[in-house]
Image (cartoon, rainbow, N blue to C red; front, side):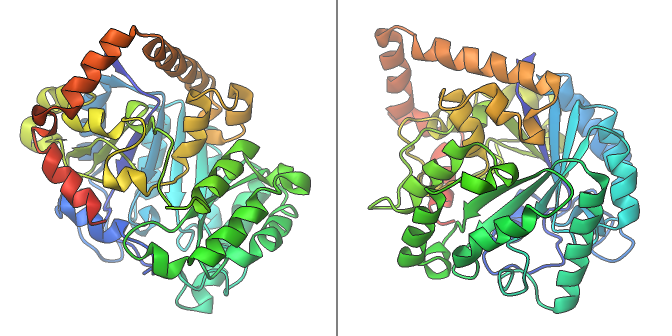
Length: 393
């Protein structure tokens, strides 16, 4: 049995009702199959719940993970998304639902929050239309998102908010934090910089450096609406680095497994590179055997990062990286709901122990491992092609 922290499930990843200027995920999701479990891209479309659960349950026979993250596209465009999340809550210690909030009604919030082990991760770039200029096409959309925020806040469960930082909102971070501090629930704001081929145009160098200086002043009075302080300081170092290249190793591929409802499996939930197996095509046994063993895992865990998509990436996963690198402790990490469940904490301890053992391996063994990665055969099974694809994203 392979042991990971969480499964990352994408359902109808190419269907979203927003057209965020910085988004590449909706377009890229098509690379991992167009025939999703959703019946169609229209109102009233539904998830083929038994089919997706069959894939997940098959995966769970081989890859144990106490937590699951589920997202689209926009999950709540699908008529039975709430029923589907309820099924997941019976299978995992914690379910994190990623949403843009446009379809998140008070009834949905009440039902899912009542399950006790479901949390929301809301994509929100600020508390004003101006801060969300790269997300919202109309004020009506913004009103729906803010109503969803209010509904989650009233329930009182911890809410994680992902803020994509760009020229549109970077200068107003502290205003947003002050607003979040007025909400009647615990909030954890995680800013991530714009990624992809348009990042330089959407988040200029001067704005990045100014934003980095603000980050270095955190948490200060804003501690109640922030995660571990080390995350914001590491993000600052990344943003104002001379060449904008990531220096820190990423452990996400050793902690998470991504499955699309098309059956595709990829090694990283953030830097989509290539399909390494497909449950529908290959069968669950053969597909699961590739997890953790494909050459891309070696390539994406290099220190320092070597894969192009990794070298330009900074994401929520860096909170996890800080813990596995020993820069923060488990209590600091567990302020985020994704890591708070007792089963998640236990798995995190296991992963960190494995990380420490790897660091203590004899130098000769590590050198032998490196030679297998760097050698001409390391990019077999599509790894070289995947690196080329990653360089273009």
